[in-house]
Amino acid sequence: MTRRLSRRGIAATALAVTAALGLTACGSSDGEGGTAAAGGEPVAGGTLKIAFWPDNPSFTCLDPFQTYWIEHRTVIRNVADSLTDQDPKTGEIKPWLAEKWEISPDGKEYTFHLRDGVTFSDGTPLDAAAVKANFDGAQAVVKETGGATYGASYILGLDHTEVVDPSTVKVVFSAPNSSFLQASSTTNLAIISPDSYKKTSKERCLGQYFGSGPFTLESYKPNELTTLKKRPGYAWGSALSENTGEAHLDSVEFSYVAEDSVRTGNLVSGAIDIAWPRNPFTVEDRELITKSNGVVESRPLPGVAAAFYPNTTAGRPLADLNIRKALYKAFDLETYAKTIYGADYPVVAGAFDSTTPFFAPQTDKLRHDVAGAGKLLDEAGWKLGEGGYRFKDGKKLTLVLPTTTQFGPGAELIQDQLKEAGIELKIEVVTGAELPAVLKNGNYDLTSSYFTRAEPGALQFILDPDYANSKALATNASSPETTAQIKKLFADARETTDDAQRESAYADLQSLLIDQGVVFPWFERVQFAGLSKSVHGFAFTSESFLKLNDIWKQ
Image (tube, rainbow, N blue to C red; front, side):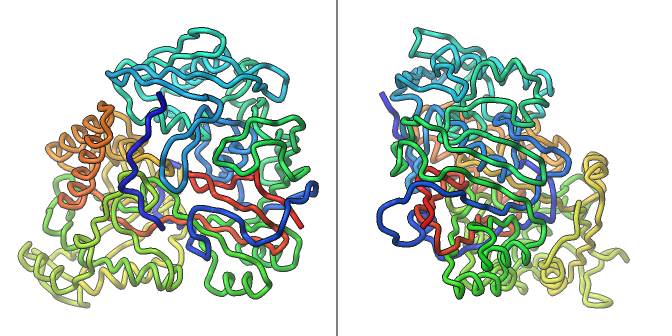
């Protein structure tokens, strides 16, 4: 049978530890993609030109299983298909390369029945043996990297994969993993040709693999140009696409532009067709795009919101729960969103963004209340003194926030908000190489992280020390008692096949994270795209990436 996942918590509307990466703002779309402009019947042919933010300088990689960079995952989505697809409106998992599936009562076995006639672009059939080769290859990468590769979080507990018959494959876990069905819809578990795993991990990062998608990877020159070509004969697109056959476009070119103003200028001038920023468009750029008859599309990125995580170890200010509670009241999240990203930008409402399945907003607990913050700080013994800051035993209440880049336009606003409550925020710029040591040594009070995935279990790879990318961050963020509660709630959600129980566990988790001062939401992460008036059929995937199946140019 095909299980329908409960998604009552969805709002309608890498793991990389950094305190500075603002990821976009909102625009004119309904949030779920769709046609950018009425344009009649699709027209075949043409080259779509897209300008991305530059590659991650420390990890340029187009291999599905290894990469976390959003721009790369957009490219992968259109080169390599997945076993399932996820409806961006409902969160429901739908058939794609797999026509149907069964999940064992204990949640340890997933059996996928593959559709016939699918091939990779090298001509190899996409059968059960090919799917097994992918999961075997993924396990080899996990072993090779010691579990550090991004895709490791998607196959947590994978034991082995069995070929039942040429069109049936069984994926077996050592412990229940209820998030795996959603994982099977993601770019990180996109299926590639078995021969691709004869290449090294580095070679696959450079694009040396074959997918089954509507486009083939023609060339990849990191930070210069990525080119996709239409694949003739493609006929197995997801039912969530209007066009399930050959792409309308002949080719797609992705360039890499660091300056937001240059990218927007190129869109308005007609040099490119889509401007895809990592940081938000300014309000002025949005107006410029719409005044030039362009369209602004947007959708919140699902997964962990941009948030701060505290160092609660003994001797640090945030070891005191009252100070952590005061911090919630000191942050003015609504003003931050409107001031930095525009009047229509959504206000973050919890540990997850609003498009995340089982999202349970914690709005009331995050309300701005300077007087309330002051009362809590007074009770904790921190009294107002020189310069409007609070002091205790002659020591100023100072929070240290390390960041790997210049903080950005919101730095002064956040510092001003905390100062209003008497808290000094010191932003210290460190290199990416230095940051892990800073976290490990505990020489900080706040740090920031996020994770893009349409599944709340993604947060365990930030907060559960057993699985976290940064064990230090996860260990320091809460007391041993609270960490044990967090781990139990993740396990309760992960190890059940009952969606109502998953929803209950994730609701309790989201409440606990705020009650115990473990996550300090900063802003809702929203993907933005500026489109020229010639672009039609634009749509976001459930991961808020770009889907090219339906796009055509007039």
